[in-house]
Image (cartoon, rainbow, N blue to C red; front, side):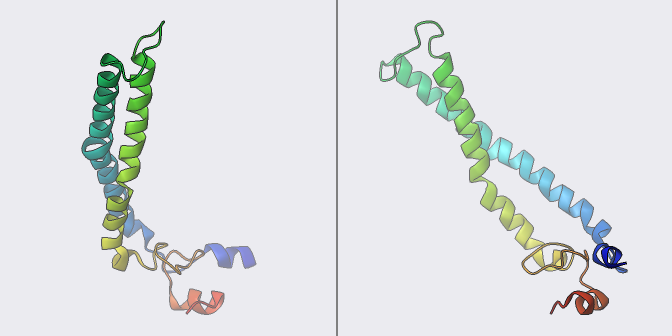
Length: 126
């Protein structure tokens, strides 16, 4: 009985927001790749290749510049993805008013996906 009360909310409407949430996530993944990760990766690889070519970085005797260029590409990709986090957060914050009570935002009810009056009284939420 107690477990059911924690997992059940009679007025849950998360299904309304699933498409909007998945759309934002998809947009963030695509935009972070094309606008940040790919450019950062390519620039870091080109700069590293240039540094190896001009002798500022030593080439590997067996593999040449490939290990350094590959590492620069991976690091550039990761930094590009990480640098786009704030943009994605702002996209989610634009829907914050709509998503509040649907399991998002500070102080959301973790047991009921929609903070209904019944859930507020059951779990002591304000």
